Length: 209
Image 1 (tube, rainbow, N blue to C red):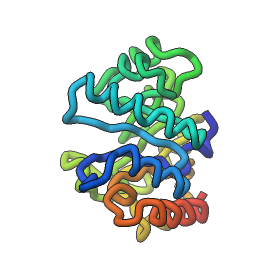
Image 2: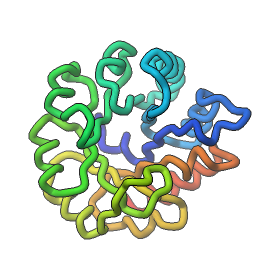
Image 3: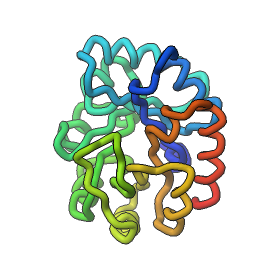
Image 4: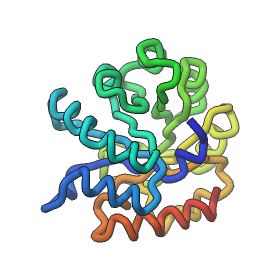
């Protein structure tokens, strides 16, 4: 995995599908310049998650963008997607890394330097750090300071992605924090024009990296 693949990391949420399909939304995000896609599904059963992963995989391959599955290590292996992202309370990074092939990407959510160093030691390829701004997507997410974000990025050798409440209006605040990219959910998937909005977000991200 190259750090630049983390520049604009789009995480799916079917809440805003309306008449659309997730495949169409993801393709719009990819056309707009998303550099990584994470399939995040908390409500579906394993079979439904696997089916979605298999539908999104060829779309991501068409744009040469990695597809990451949230939480489900075994399903990620079964679908042969590019990697998996785990939280602190999910499958531990070490257990996930031991199951995944060496060429598969492992991302881990962190809020502290201690968690970041542990995840790195356990084989994480990148860290998702946040929430950096208040977010409605994860009601229990506590925000961390931009100072903490910067300290985590300085403490580890692997790339760091900021997550949580990031949108067009606040990306500039993340300048000089040492991150390799931003992770967004509603800023992309709740947008009326996903492709155009993703393009604008990509431009803003490139200004701060």
